[in-house]
Length: 197
Image (cartoon, rainbow, N blue to C red; front, side, top):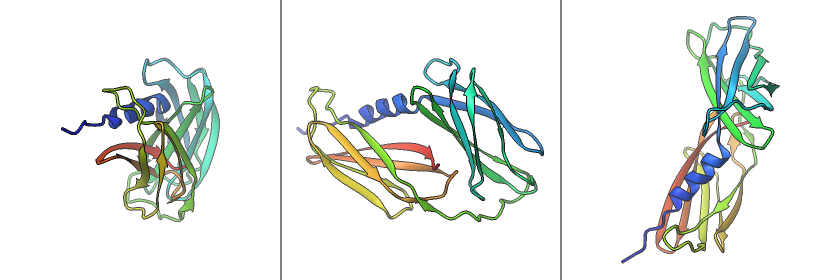
């Protein structure tokens, strides 16, 4: 009988550790500002310090601010709310945790997509351990994004994997990163949603 690998539960643990911040915000009418607060999703406490950045997907406009006492205010540079704009927010805490949020604002059809994709380098690492035995695994990891032809894979030993990935992405868009780990004849999958910076 084949032993089932439980890599997915290990990846999910890593994702919760890395992406443990929630961003809650509102967008005012013109002149546009984004106000909100940032909390740790595991316990609901406020993030006391860090930074936050927004990107408007359609135009690439961006701005950043600091997080102080759990709250933030950003001027958002939207000159018209006649069309819909996609806003992606990325929060980084002073202790290196990351979270994101996104929203669509505006009443009509989407604004023209004037921003083009640019190559972004992403770095991921983690451990592949069989929870049934506690043993570190040897295998191959592949990272990619659906509908984007570029992917990257690498072999790993002793459970530790480290991979770079450089797809062409549109800043402010939320992408689902797909991880597949192959150990022997078993393949397990995990997914992570992130805002492209």
